[in-house]
Image (cartoon, rainbow, N blue to C red; front, side, top):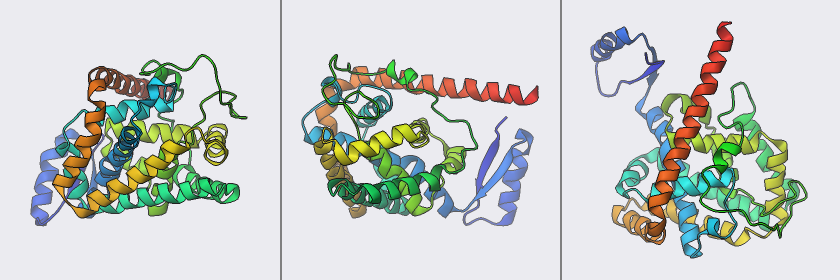
Length: 318
């Protein structure tokens, strides 16, 4: 049985809606009624702006002409998700994502805010504004993750480490005072995503329940994993302010995020195709292995989440 069915009445009489309700009634589902505007907002968040974040990562790395996971970066935990999902997206056809972004007015708004969040947080990083950055990031955390009343999607990074495309360096050259290991990462893409949700008043867990995609579930899972740990979040903030090991990549990411936002705002499919294809061509030689590993990673997380949910439901019945 389906837990719920989303019904959108658009340009239809009440009788048509009642007919659909009657057809679906044997499924014994709970009905959730949305307007088409609500649907566009949910779709923009769970798909378009999530894709834009990973597209920006790929463009940033391609502009630096480097595969960072092959040089000791992005080889563990949260970073594994970034690399694998980015490669998964770029290994697909451009039109899979173009329409979701360009034809949805809500997507343009959200992607523009994501680019703004990225730029504004990066400016706080450059000015080493410790107080300003902490206020902004902690405020976003409280707005999005303040009510911790559900089981986390990702309990540990250990399951992600099995799907890394690279190897960690045997010697740590850059140490953070919090984790004591290198390389430190500001996780700017995640800081900006949660800030974007907070600025737009979006509750991503509501969208997760309504229209979860595997990629969005992973994305919100790693954001939650970072933001609900004071230690991990403070490590990211410290790296953002005082560690320059990822600074050049962060700069490229800011430029890429703004570029994708402008590209989508122009509404030009040819421009989108050209921008997508340029970045995709750089990663072409890495697609075959990465897509297999990425699919296995997604399946492992989905299975882990399902097992935990089943255990919780079993516990509730005892």
